[in-house]
Length: 34
Image 1 (tube, one colour):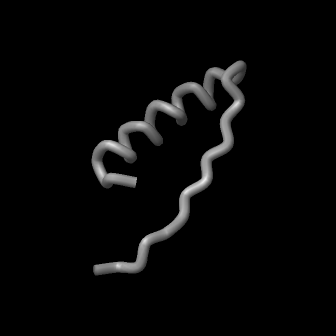
Image 2: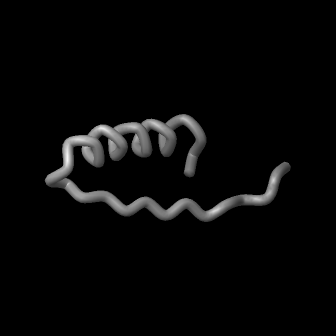
């Protein structure tokens, strides 16, 4: 197994690009159990 990494995400909910990125991070969380 590989060594776990720490992922920190900062987001601005007013920014539409941050909103889209937040959805991708949520999908990563489901796909890779992070």
